Image (cartoon, rainbow, N blue to C red; front, side):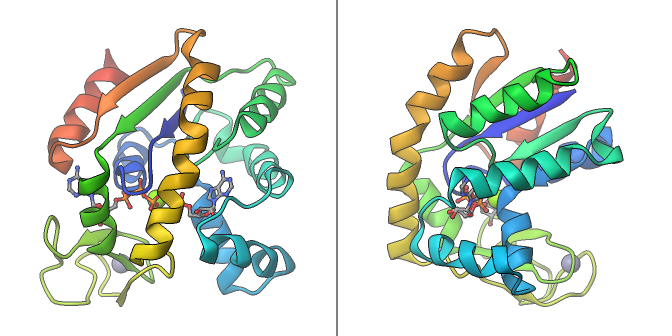
Length: 214
Ligand code: AP5
Ligand code: MG
Ligand code: ZN
């Protein structure tokens, strides 16, 4: 299966993508994670992307499309994949359609997680991430057993640079500018599903699995 997870910042794309990826074996491809790695490694792309990410703006389409096109040609993507945070614009969606069509493929399912803005702010300001394994925590909704330590690997937990109130607001604005256009792009093909992401993590997971297994 080739799946896209859409949704606003904090909707739970990363949290759910990790679970789906573990269950079905499809790789989770998060453009945000790939870009953050490039920033940490201070590659040329990372230095360029950092300016946009710190401002809560989208990294230019040509950069992100290049990243995805390269990633999708790797062997682990051939049996399916799960895109988390891509596409973000109709231009990116069109590029993806074209890239998949070149090898006779297409997206099987688009799942659009929707959550209200107030809840999203709570989720993002309380989020903590493991520096070593990328596992997501939340100070209130899924706290680690020991403060600032990852339950899975013992790594150190950190807060993302763009998870401050001002940048979060900018990210919401950017999301709102693109969301309807992306929904329209995918709405006609029959692959589009909107899913309420406001329930607790396990409930959203159940609804997602029902969709995928249905
Ligand atoms: P990206 O990393 O994709 O960030 P985002 O879209 O803002 O989404 P988040 O990762 O913040 O949220 P999420 O939906 O993954 O939520 P999570 O599961 O962590 O992108 C970052 C930046 O990179 C962009 O701003 C842009 O600059 C650039 N970029 C990335 N992709 C790009 C692209 N395609 N084009 C251009 N630029 C791009 O959950 C959040 C928190 O809530 C966690 O603490 C979690 O534990 C908790 N939580 C999750 N689900 C629930 C639940 N059901 N109930 C309670 N708590 C929950
Ligand atoms: Mg994420
Ligand atoms: Zn960890």
